[in-house]
Amino acid sequence: MSDKIAIVTGGGSGIGAAVGTALASDGWTVVLAGRRRTRLDEVAAASPELTLDLVPTDVTDEESVRNLFDTTVTRHGRVDLLFNNAGMGGSPRDLDEIPLDEWQAVVNVNLTGAFLCTREAFRVMRKQQPQGGRIINNGSISAHAPRPRSIAYTATKHAITGLTKSTALDGRPYDIACGQIDIGNAATDLTTAIAEGVLQADGSLRAEPRMRAEDVARAVVYMASLPLDSNVATMTVMATKMPYVGRG
Image (tube, rainbow, N blue to C red; front, side, top):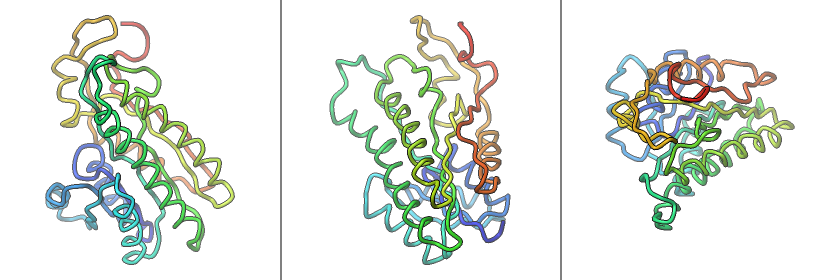
C-alpha cells in the first residue's frame, strides 16, 4: 500500500482525523486537509509515528480545493483515494426561522465542497496512469431518517447520495469507483449533545448511544482496500442501540 495516495478532508478532528490516521496505519500516504492548520498539527502530533502530509484547505473555495489536489500530485504523483468528509450541521430551528445565509453555509460545505473535491479528484484520476481511483463520500443516516429541525443538513445528505450515484456512473469508463458510508452516532465533539439528550421525532428528549470514531475508520479502510473492479456502493455503520432501526 505504500504507493497509494489518499486525501481526507475535514481531517482536523473527529471522523476525518480517525480515518486519516487509520489509513496511514494501513500503509497509505495520507494528505490530511482541513481549514485550521493548528487542528491538523494536533492530529499529526497525536500520532508521531505516522507520516501525514498536512494541507490546510477550505473546501468551499474553488482555488483552495484546486491547490489541495495540485499539491498532492506535485508531492506524491497521483491520487488513489478521496474521502469526502468535511461537513457541518446547522443550528436546530423551526423551518420558517432558518435564515438564508445559514442554509447556504451548510450547503456550501456539505454539498458544494464535496462536489468541488469530487470534480478535482475526477480530473486527476481520469488523467493519471494507471488510470482510476476511489471516492468515498461521508453520508449520514439522516439521508434516510431525518432528525427534527435539521432540514439543511438532511437535504445536503440526501444530495450526497445523488452525488455518489452520479459519480459512480460517470466514473465507470475511467475506473473511478465511488461509494458512500452512512454513519450513525460516531462519538466526536459534534455529537456530544446526542449523548446528553437530543430531540426525538415524538417530541421527547433522549440520550442516544454512540460508537467509537475508530470503528467508522475501520469501515472506511475496508472500503478503500478493495480493488477498483469491486465497490461498496453504500454502507451503514452505526451505534447498535441507537433509535434508528424500528420504532422507539
